[in-house]
Amino acid sequence: MHNGQRFLGQTLDSVLAQSLPDFELIVVDDGSSDETPAILASYAAREPRIRLHRQSKAGQVAARNKGYELAMAHFVANLDADDVALPTRLERQYSFMVEQPEVGVVGSAVAFIDERGRQFGSWNYPLADSELRRELAHTAPLAHPATMTRKDAVIECGGYRSIFIHAQDLDLWLRLSERHRLANLPDVLTGYRVHAEQATARRCED
Image (cartoon, rainbow, N blue to C red):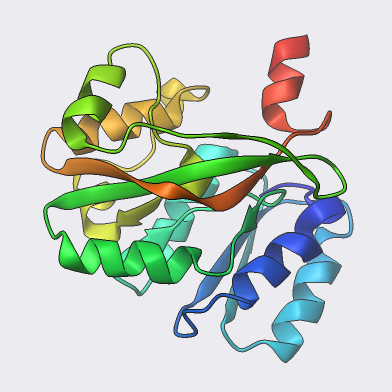
């Protein structure tokens, strides 16, 4: 994450309020110059499950790969600094991955939320592996900030690659699909925030 102060508190609170209590929250601060370091330090001082890593700005791909490198758990759930996880997200995805060892990544439906956290829409993705593979031909059929992956599977296929900076998730799903099945859960488990400052909006304006 880089300069995520605006919504960071809401994001951290949503993870710390999960129904699954046993987890580590790894936060990679990619050279933030705003109040992000201070916010993270404040949370980490009172929450032992938070592990902070601060690095000079290296970009999103490097930050995400560093998170996987630091993770001690077998499963890694992704979440951006402006999105929120619904209370049962980790529990639901963890249980699914334990029960489905052939699956390398599981996502979910997402709710679109505005700057105040109000929902104004939602999006459902295909659920079955066969459907997801068909969609891979022309789109990313999993919402990256709503996914949980097997750490070893991501590392074995090379992690995120900077050559696909604006399609790094699709590139990763394609490589994961060569060795593992893909899946989505039908319920909304993540709030995807839409606002003018997010990276997708900035790319559309360029």
